[in-house]
Image: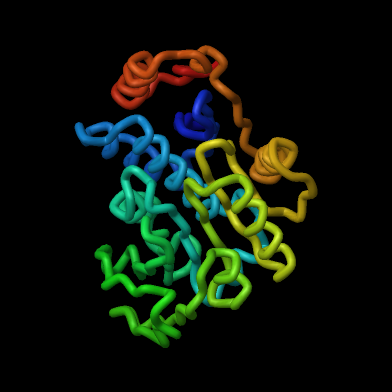
Length: 269
């Protein structure tokens, strides 16, 4: 077993996942952690967010989170992030890059909420062309119909005003939501469950949300889904109790030690 340590599952906790080295997950998440830490402009929030995304992608890619609908994704993945996200699209793209090509499907769609309202879309094929496409205002265009990426894969983005409506259209089969509210997360979970699709949701107040037809709202839903993720994945997820009240500089120092030395158990409770 190889330990991967990651932050950002909540604003006050660290998490430790034990992952078999053969899964190819360690390289994906570990590489991203190192890259973010080497960026002097990346604050703690940016690091947490990026690692959340990388670990989420890696867990799906490894096949240890049995979200059955994701095995047959045909229409791509919708990745939702608010405009207030500190690291923005560059962090999303970096996370996808380090998580590896064809993480869930060949095509991905980024929906980013603009500060003035409405959503823009960016399309990325991470293993072929990691660059931003021209943003499309979803409120001002009916469709980005069958845009062809260099690989020849096609997908459709329809005009919708919200992530949950976007899911309802059937344009995508899965949603990864970063940094959105618990209320919005719950709505998206409901929509995808009704459509017999699933989502992996990551936000600042939730350790890990796996939409698996669980019932409940708010903290209850988060707890249930967190336990479901642990049970379904087979991974042991522990909260770092010693870091619950740690000041930011202490957390930063531990991060440096974790990445530099790779010592097992650092930051664990």
